[in-house]
Image 1 (cartoon, rainbow, N blue to C red):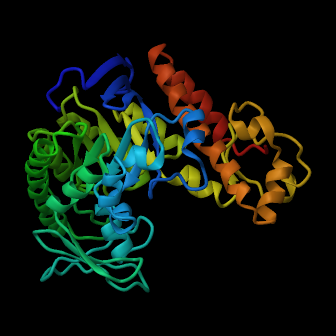
Image 2 (cartoon, rainbow, N blue to C red; image 1 turned 90 degrees about the vertical axis):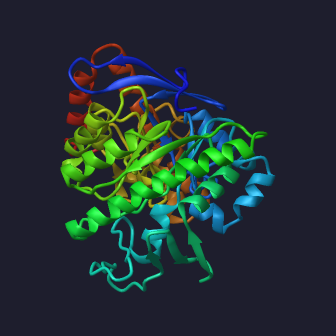
Length: 405
């Protein structure tokens, strides 16, 4: 599939940056890029119906192999007809490899990742946490965060799990490191991830042939290397030489280095394959990523902050639980076209959050997902008409001006 000339079509290329539009053609429909891919970790975007995600303009959903492997089991999703049919989502689907959750849930917290290879000096772990995952050159042994049972992921197991999940786009199994790990550890880890990538390609090819009655799945390699230019470039060159349909760009990095790191990676990758940036969803990061050549993105942030009563507005993010919203009989944002803003007021959402009603998370999530999906859609349009720089200047200037909404 990676060699098919019609898999990824490049549209307009921005004359002032590496931003571009394009189309990824999947068995469940096209993805017009740049595109924000909402995260439905356990085959659901928390608190929101799949039908609502369709209505708010989401083009695809990303689910997590680690979580679905543990519950309900990849075999059950396979028996149901695959991820999309299981969750009643008609469009394209992604699954990540499970590597992030194996390591972050196993031994770290949030995005502070930690892991250990036996006999290695680097033993970084989040404070107050027990080590639940150990890496060796063959894979990762980990303890379930649900019930404490022991499991093992190898590149082959990750491919098998993702094949059963049946997403249109799946990711190679990789090892994540932290910014606290030594350079020597990063070098060893990168070589481990390279070998795992080769094994993923072999197993993916085998599964595609043996599961010929299912739809084709594209495999993306994942580029690591933390904040080291030579390691990022080497990782990109190594994976560019393998039979991947596209590439994921992941790993620990500091926000202010995002554009620079993406530049190193994009320098080494082929132009004719899509690039997915893992875990990015803040407005300023989206502009930087797109200008640096990324095509798609996923992030839990819009739904996660919504469940904590924070909502996006064209004049900046704010919290619905503050006293200012108590008698605000106006939409979250009167320029927003989402269902929530068309039918509910800030005062109602303030009440629902105060009363701890489940509808609060639903309505806030619909708004936040629509806000980010539409923002990336608008960026895509601005590239098409040659006005990305102007649109970025206007949007960022307003969004981060700390105005009262």
